[in-house]
Amino acid sequence: EIVMTQSPATLSVSPGERVTLSCRASQSVGSNLAWYQQKPGQPPRLLIYGASTRVTGIPARFSGSGSATEFSLTISSLHSEDFAVYFCQQYNTWARYTFGPGTNLEIK
Amino acid sequence: EVQLVESGGGLVQPGGSLRLSCAASGFTFSSYGMTWVRQAPGKGLECVSYISGGVPTTSYADSVKGRFTVSRDSSKNTLFLQMNSLRVDDTAVYYCAKPGDAGGFASWGQGTLVTVSS
Image (cartoon, rainbow over all chains, first blue to last red; front, side):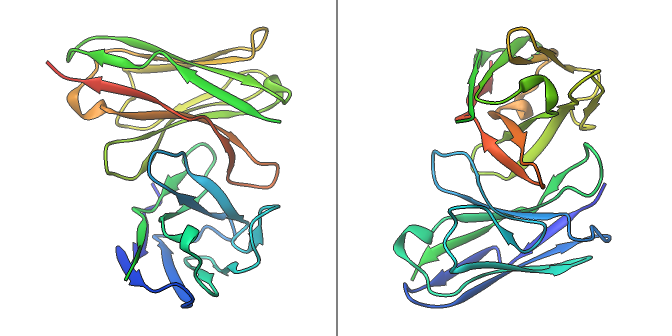
């Protein structure tokens, strides 16, 4: 099983700041990496797939990068609605997809 | 518009059984592999089972293998998860998820809560 790790576990930031969240895979997943945003009481929402492709309707302030085992999600200028938990997920291995433990983005 | 609506969750004693359903609409259900993803309270996400489109092939997380069975009725656009021998650590919100055309889970239901407790 491919193990996904994320850092930091919690990030306290102010609106308007730029943040970068990190995700690492225990072995190469190529570009088969997705990012999700989850707010309390809601299902996850897909933001990025293919490591760097934004889903239609996701604001341009969200960007993804990386390949193989190292990935990042950058939010260029935080809006109040961006405070949430962010998960990365690899989908490189058929039917054996795994998620990272999440990064909680909270208001400072 | 894709819609996924889960049902069937509830409170069950350890060792008991539940059958979850996920009613799908807005897409050609039979063409897509579908996944059940669970999230324990305050915890992360775990893919517990997958069933392919077409001629069904299934896959399970080690944590549920031998206890859970995923199936689908394409005539009714419905996905199922039969859960037997439930344990306290199966307590979670269970989501059904549909993949996007290019990767990741693009569509999710609102989830159904399964609580295993005596």
